[in-house]
Image 1 (cartoon, rainbow, N blue to C red):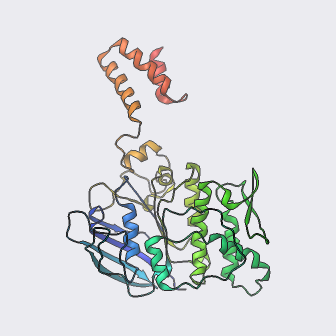
Image 2: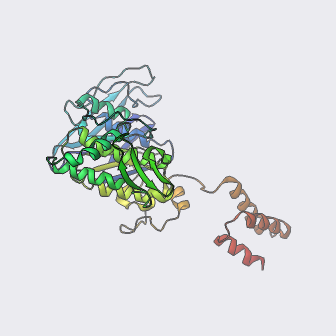
Image 3: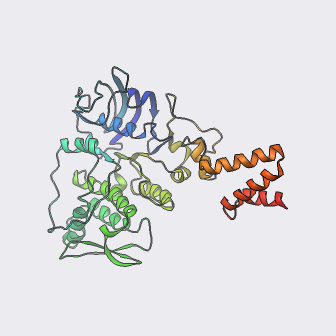
Length: 389
């Protein structure tokens, strides 16, 4: 495999989706797209995917409402060679067709796009099956729809049950299976792989509640499994013949924090980096906790207005945002005007107004309400209680 199989370097959108103009430079490893809701995070992923599709038609990408056409320009690297291109979008209504503008080469196999729909239900397997023989057009279709996670169980059961007979397996297959076995404990050390039942082909996990099929785990676990196993099985189903640690293609994940408890946001981010250390990753998130764990050069903060990602002033290159509170990130990164619930903001405003007017009756009433609402160890509570003495 070449040193760099696939990278997106630069993307310029004009009148595409909700963007009037947006220009983004991507880093060679982890890129976390964040910002206000509805600002166009998923549009960026769909735009990247579209340039690696030879016949882009009827996809999610479309021109901005009120414009005649959208323009997409990009530069990328494929098999260590730089290239660029441009395309136009004239479609807007769901029934509109558009002119194809993708690449005429098989780069799609090295781009794995995990969309937000990645949960799965229990599936009964009929036995060990051969890997599917996928074609180039199927990889390109997955850039429109996202990869499937419904075949994760079949892939793992195949590998697990055939491992004793895999004396001639290539090293990358052994490495990927060993990595896959660790994924079950990724988010919770009390959950671990027990075995694959050779009669039912079910994947069974040891949990604090007992032994259960992995499909019986919570939605958070299932979507996490769909994500991390989905990427790994795609490396093998696409016959890339590479271990996860050596993959130098592009991985895109929409809503990386989906269904995850906040305590899992940081570990999931670090786990992806550890599993695919040479891949370029472009992910979106609504999670302030993931932003806390990111390095400043990882962040691509899309603004509500403007043509380039926002830059955060005064952020230390070494420590990033680890000392920022969730409220500070919600306000200064995610674009919330006030991260507090409106009812609490009104209570604080009433207290501040009463203090300004020196209205003792109103101050006492506002203090009483605030003390009932505040966290027991809140600094604001402590200040108010001191003022009350």
